[in-house]
Length: 502
Ligand SMILES: Cc1ncc(COP(=O)(O)O)c(C=O)c1O
Image (cartoon, rainbow, N blue to C red):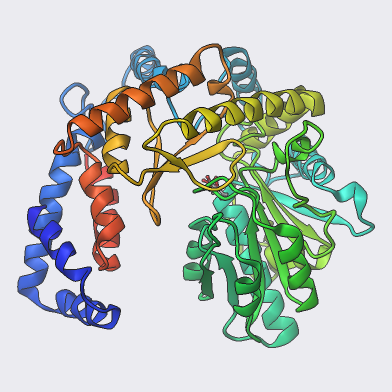
């Protein structure tokens, strides 16, 4: 660790081309590789306990047990682990992750899942009820997001999550541009703050992602975004709101630019799709972001976040049938028969779609409006309270995902100090910051107050213990400052390797 820290310090003084050359060299020299591997192992060994907390306590199944285990024993073990693991999110110590979490709501979704557990929408002839649920999920989401205010048909599909919604939309734009504009090297223009899923889409589908720096308010810089458009641009992206800073990009201006340039515009409302529709009428300043804007040609909205469905569903929407057709997969000459599917997966868990539909119709517009009111009010309060802590600075003008940094403290040490007090917050980069994504779990009596009390205490602790290393602070600090990005991504890949180690 110490070696990497020193190297980082030195590397940050070098010009970018020199850093890139060094990076290439490091990957070619066997000695350097070995040295890096030792450093990685050392860092990961420190994390191992966090990655495998049950190693000592539970049986590890490297291979199938010869005899099947008793079902009651399996259930009892799982119930014990879940009881242990749900304390933090249930009591409101976790940023995002579980967005509703009331016991009655969870029991209801579990019953719906159990009723529909065998359903697979690939076989729509066997489970037409699931096809009905999915069509209605899409239609209800589309109408919540402006479909009633445009003459264009707003259509879409249910997907497995925000990432899949984004990947599918990006691929649809790529294939449309290839077919209609003969574009061979398609480009996506997105603000720096857009979700990592856009990088993933660009990598998977051989597209170029042009990341544009955001303005001082952390929102997309409208004129810089326009300047980034080239003849190869197929789509521009804006977030409502962005994951890191929770701010809403100037979608009306961006969508207008996209329309003038004849390219697509995707509003990523994975986080905001089920909150922002009610924000304006609840008196919060939120710009238009949906299909009311003629330039918006697609959207993603996550039912498994503020739609309060179980994890594993999201909705991707398009203006018009043509774009959605580029998302589908259909093959007519496969020996296995006529095969077609709307999304990446073949077989899918119909029970999750049923639970998503049940969550939506049981909440109703009124339920979503009330939930949004509670979340926005808590966000407003927390934002003001965090802003009053002298060493902290709230980034931008957020509504309910509140990011804060510090001009005086190491913010990653503060993250560790909050972890030590039971909190699970998100660490951010560029600039170094931390955020709390407010969910219904934080709207209960005393939870917001407890957060701010703990935050004040954690700030005082970090000020008094500047040398405390903490668990994640060194790794975040390294990732934030080490200019050799491929080393950090190496480390992340190795973390996944470790997770899969039995
Ligand atoms: C703005 C935004 N877009 C996309 C995603 C990706 O969603 P998922 O994790 O469901 O794939 C997230 C997740 O937090 C998000 O906040």
